Length: 355
Image (cartoon, rainbow, N blue to C red; front, side, top):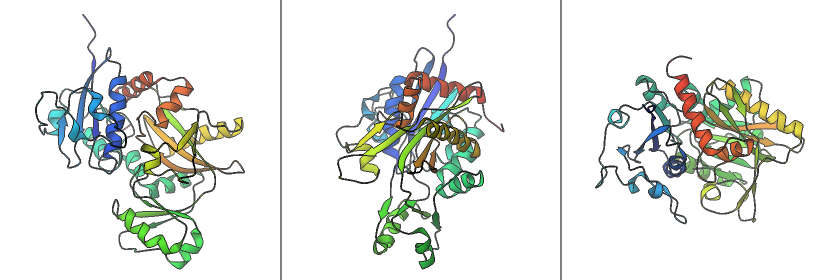
């Protein structure tokens, strides 16, 4: 008798502003899953929150020029029009869920809580780690509490319109104004003149009523992948450095990430060996400080004095063809198909519940 395949639901899309990026990630992951080991069920969530079961065909999830894919472009497995299904129906008889959701209503602990209640093992960190890593304020507070260096920041809650003069003096210029709970550089502005601060806050609040304003850190942007193995080992990848080229933009915004060819990457990053070692060590420390499981991408600034400043921790980093997480692990010796297998097997070994 042949061994039963593990049934894996790949969930993507979602209600966040990163819907299209999630679809790109799914379009990259689906064809690289080991079909000798896994039976795959593609499950899309529309921007309105409708769950659908799509055909196992990635063509609808490919980027075409500057047009990004959406769950609405899927072809259903049964043919015809997309038919809404309940989450319980979409995930029926599934062994492991791969929640490839980026941003709110997915990466922030919400689907993790749903899967815990359903007793369904899933790829990635649990409810707490997902929630605090999605919220840039609490990410920084917990990392700082663990003795790791983070930049200066101020949080504006719903009832706070703008910075006080004292806060402006503390942060200095330039600053980055961000939705506190979003990713993929959606809603972010670089402010070099206080006259533009309020419009930047208004833009960020289109995504999230809670806004974080960060002092700019002068340094090289370096990322590091962290991976948990089925036996419980946690390791860090070789780091990657991001460089903006061409002079058209000076920071890594949404268009630079996904639409414009203005970025170059050094993998591994050209750092002194001792800096690389410290960076990889701190990436694992950050992973543990936030109680992560499965995977995370940890983003740093490396200053001219080789000081490390942690920027963000992403608990479901992109898996698109240009995404750094799988590329860093490929350079570390773990190819894409093997990486996906490790993530799924780690999730199955961990199970659900308190751990």
